[in-house]
Length: 300
Image (cartoon, rainbow, N blue to C red):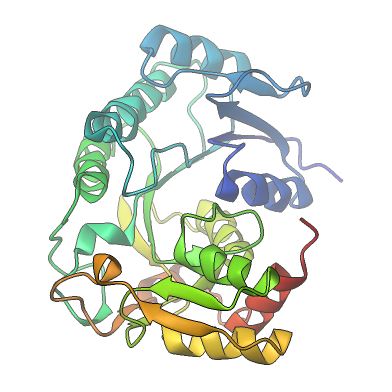
């Protein structure tokens, strides 16, 4: 059953984009998507270079969306070209917001995905939105710059900025930590090389993240920056133990000094008080064990 409204997802072919499309489609939206890869067979997919303003304007007019979820970004911190972070994450985002401003129809809500990476690596504990940002790499700097840039459009567009913490699920690239661990267990490899496994992090399930994004679209949280996280911490040692329990396979951990960050924070967790308040959502989150089981048992 449709609600008669159109949703535009940038980065729809990415890991999060595909789950976001399923979430909004189930909520009754007609889903359209922008992506950088060649056009898919779907008439609702448009190949767009976000760094080309004219191209972005044309595509926005073609869709005329009611809600927008901006996920498109260079997201891998180790990406080879530092300039690409700024070209896409900052300038590309600005092009999108400008195009939405100049569109014949103003959207009801525009969710812009930033990152908890903006907090950096030197503030331990449970981080609230008021925590001082201390970005420690080009990816994080580009995302924080994007937040400031987006704030220039607050008076013109109903913008919500999210800062997601770590999240994972089936389909996430294997250069991310949890998929790397899951791959080793799926292949029943004897050894895995990791950095410091005695660190605690906040891991969400991608399906919970996209559910929260949908809820925020209807929250009227405009002009706000909102953490999206589980609010719970798990150690990497615990992740390994859960995988061992689920698969019956034991694995030897070798600490590779190249993977150990100097002065790495032991505990990092998202304060989701604002998120819970805005979405009025106290529902149970998907436990990490269930997420790992889903990933371990997924068909490749």
